[in-house]
Image (cartoon, rainbow, N blue to C red):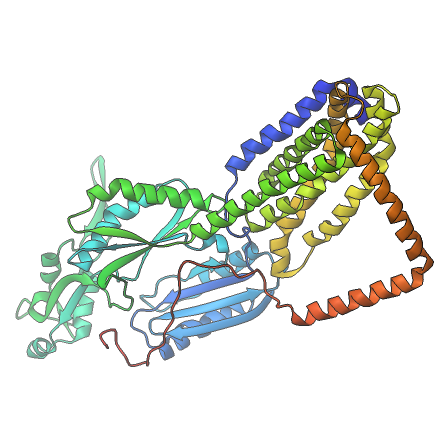
Length: 576
């Protein structure tokens, strides 16, 4: 017994198969992430190192040159770019497109772990480039009288409220400096006490520290000992003794930090500024976790901010500066709307050409079975609902009904020959099944090579090709099992021929006669027709090839603007 006869004789099997595809697809689509673009790791790795106070020349000599020497031993590097700025170094590695970025990231980490950086330099920050790791929200906090207090409150309260929300990844503060303990040294007082800055630094390094001091054993007791020398308040830092002058011990008097410097709980050097309506502000960038629904994450963050705004200190306000998910939400909503419109138009056209409500209803069931069932494949493939997967689903609307229409039309023809509904469904489906399989495989042969495209474009169109192929193959399964079963059930109660069907049959018969006359004319001049078609195709292809712009993805309108300006190298932030 083949699959067609099994579905007709055991309709429960076909109904369970149909509802399983729809139910599992509906469950998985609610668990899928939503993003603007597919989750693709570009073959690019960024390495950033901070060296506070170092000039670009020092950064190049002390950081960039050693880092480049280490990285040159890594296989598959296509291009290496480096830039040195005041207090920071940036190295960008571009690998071959076939290189596994995760493996390359591990090799970069291993190579830099053996590198000895200058004292006081933080370890290098290594990141992959992925659109999924871009910020989804930029929030600003403003209204406070003191920027330091706003930073402290945000770090101790606001950021924690956001970080623990489901789906939220990294939350970082931008546009403001970090809280820092500043020691402003008075050079005249240093001269008075015959001290140098190195003496003050040595005192801080030796006394402002907390470390393990070993263990203490007394009889049956053993205690762990710690050196609690790290100051926790400004006055404790002020009272740190300066014990040595030029390396020699000071015996004649007691000197403290407060005797030669002013200690202040302030901010680090301000090199970034944030302004909202002309007032000082803090910029907070919020990123989502990979594979999550960025629209839902952004909405949960905004909802949380609305809930806790009553707990803000007096005068504090927040503002959503940029919501990058608005364009994603609009794109997904518009694509789903087009998906519904395409489905409705397809059903109307099928009804007008088939002339039967029962036949159109049969075709109607084939669309959700194929489209919604495809979501299960996308979910277990690790894909998201993005511009490419939704585009594939929209394009496949008119394709998934082809097999069902082909089988249904032949089943109706056998039914009008006087056969009962089950026999007509079996004979009609089997007769055109090879043609349906050939048509489906032809569509798969068109879109499957997209999966094997090279380069960044190939990584993006991978999800497009798999979505198209999965949707078309599920539609073939639906046409082989569920369509004959539904035809056998619906044809049993259908009248012989309706007036609309009779009118359409007559109309298409007359149209077929006109087409036969045109076809006979073209066959008479077949070589001329083929030559003209080839020339027309070459002209159109040549015109489009030269005039059409080439971009990775079409430009989309944005609701925000980036303005970049350059300033002279010796201009400070106070210049107006």
